[in-house]
Image (cartoon, rainbow over all chains, first blue to last red; front, side, top):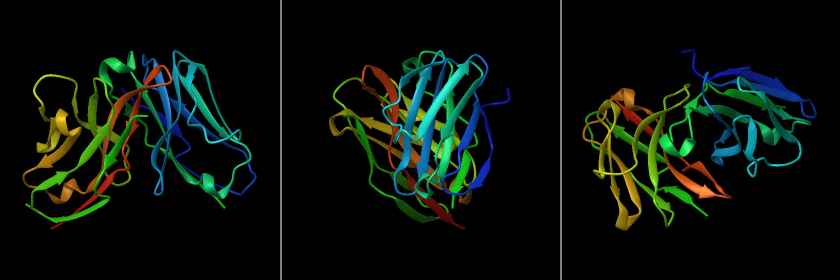
Length: 116
Length: 115
């Protein structure tokens, strides 16, 4: 099993540029989560999909952030325009079934974003 | 709203010392509790979890955690730490918010073990 795959692993960009982070969940997993990790705020849940449908996006910081899941094997998190305060590690995670049954998330390696 | 508090942000220990990391949660209903670990440069992985039954849960690598309902706590313990335990540890709870379950993480505790 390849695990959750994220790309890019590292991205350095300039303020104002568009950033797109990608995630491929584990095959067969029904739930997908995007988290942001910073020193100041720790791990924050940004958005949660179940069966490709956004369930809870209350953690998305503002309109500059958007996430899509066009099919069961792919999700994107887009920031447009990016700002220095968006610098963080963005993790994607997936879960195999109704999330409440197991509670276990399988995390990707993360995408480290630096906005200059 | 549900929340998770981890009391120690940074812990420094020598090898063979005992470890206890505090975790308290606020949630009135049935809880499912977790500890995740993030080794340097790696992704988070599950260390152990509690759903029901024996409140003393044993996980991988010699870690254990005790659920004390009356104290809303789920502290992580290890009797003798090793240098390889250097990592960040996250306590988490499944909370019900906005009509859906979601995993809520504490701020994390960075553990540094010196040889």
